[in-house]
Amino acid sequence: MKEEEKDKRKALFAQITEKTAPVIEKIGNLSRKQRLLICLGTLAVLTGVYYYFLLAPRLERITSLEKEHATLSERLRTYKRKAASLDEFENRLQAAESDFYTALMALPDKKEIPSLLTAVSKSGNDAGLEFLLFKPESEAKKDFYAEIPVSIKVEGGYHQIAEFFDRVAQLSRLVNIQNIVINAAKGSNLSVSCRAVTYMFVEKSDTGEKAKAEDKRKRRK
Image (tube, rainbow, N blue to C red; front, side, top):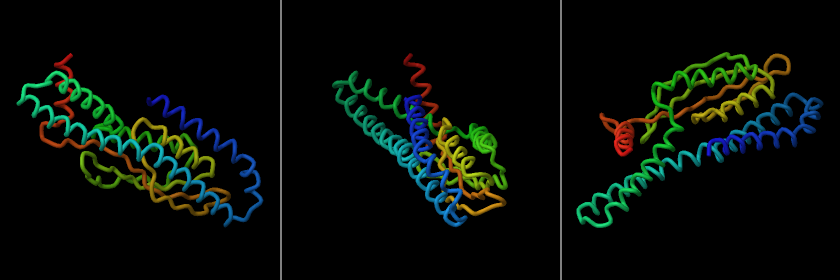
């Protein structure tokens, strides 16, 4: 499934590049203000496409699976008391647990956060951007996950910025680019300020439901 999503993103990016190539050639003849407006609009579209097709569906899927897991757990307890259809509901619960924790693999554990932030920084460096600011901020806890924001300010060309956003979109973990602000920089470069937000799984109890589920699946094997 991850390979298919990655192929779709690459195909989409290739189509956008191919269709916009003639337009980009004409941009050089426009005024700086017009070029900035075009860049801002393009980045806004890329961000919207990333959120709509990648981030939002995954978060919605995780939330849906968590609700399904809770519902099936309650049903399983009921059928255990009634001693009816036990095997059927145990299999359904196992499948729900497996799907739920497979979806959670997109959320990094706490120990993975430093390496993920390094990957975001490396994506910018590999794209040829100059980092003026890379500042991790305090995490914001939600339900079963926490947001880990990073304030970023980079400088570089339009294509380098677009490549940076594409590299971040292809990371194995969820990273969302928010609050994009674009300003003119020296020469034909652009200065871009934004927030990169990743999402960390949060244990719901001291024992940790994720660890318990993994241990349970190992015992069943």
